Image 1: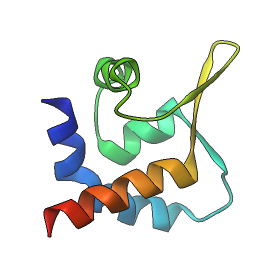
Image 2: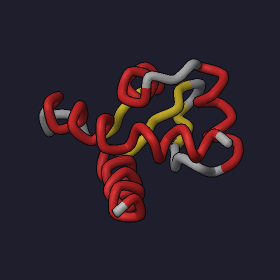
Image 3: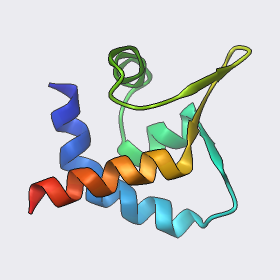
Image 4: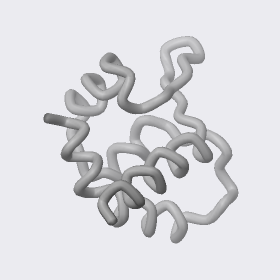
Length: 80
């Protein structure tokens, strides 16, 4: 169910990501929450299920920008 949520919001999130600029190589959870307009618990479920690739550094989850962008591009192509 949640992957459908990301698929529906992928093109909007891709636009937001492009507006932010390329200064960040890694995104924090708060950045991803804003991109997809999802709750913290939804993000935790997406992480746990492997729907969004992430890395853990200490107690912080980081999301590689290019992996998130590639995932969103794939989802937007699947819509066409």
